[in-house]
Image 1 (spheres, one colour):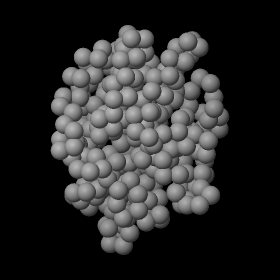
Image 2 (spheres, helix red, strand yellow; image 1 turned 180 degrees about the vertical axis):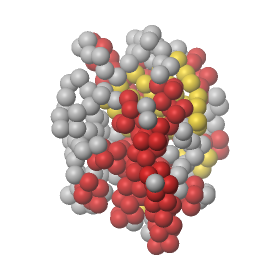
Image 3 (cartoon, rainbow, N blue to C red; image 1 turned 90 degrees about the horizontal axis):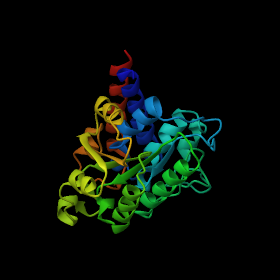
Length: 275
């Protein structure tokens, strides 16, 4: 792993995500920014894929169950050449190939359509099981929101994955501690998420989820005999202070002075990493 190169890639994901949502004028920006570092590590250092063959059978797969973070995933995919960068300007516009939530029928590199929270967990379990049954040396990576873990379907999937020892399933929980209607502690306090997954039979780790080195190291410490979960302690809106410091930032209007300030911070970060 080249830490600087991965940090540069994360900064580019943030830049493109802010530009994309700024072009639309509104969107799920904060929860997209909080997963940028994990996506950077996966697409820069860890996952096996072929941008010119997005349906390649031997690829690692990724399910963005918190489908509203699609913009960050679109940025990563475009930067890796799955589709033209110009597509990013069409986010959630009529006729777009990039809807606000991930759609596998529209976007190259999207492995499963998501948005109805909890369902991506079951889908990822199925994909991982199929990989094992087919004898593929491949993994399925799953992103869950912390608020999404209120869904019972997540825990049904967790039990199934442990029962079938799906060690090729790697789940990230974006523990940014906010959801649509408030903090996760206020809405439904999930308590110790790491301990919960461990009790369900998973190998669980909790780390700083906005540090690419910690994320990479966690991915080098996976269990070979049980499903894996990495609890990402993140900041909602990570990398853009004006968004981090907005209390209700799940879905935001992104225009005017806010957009100008956000883009300036992204540009400054990228410049600091490349000069």
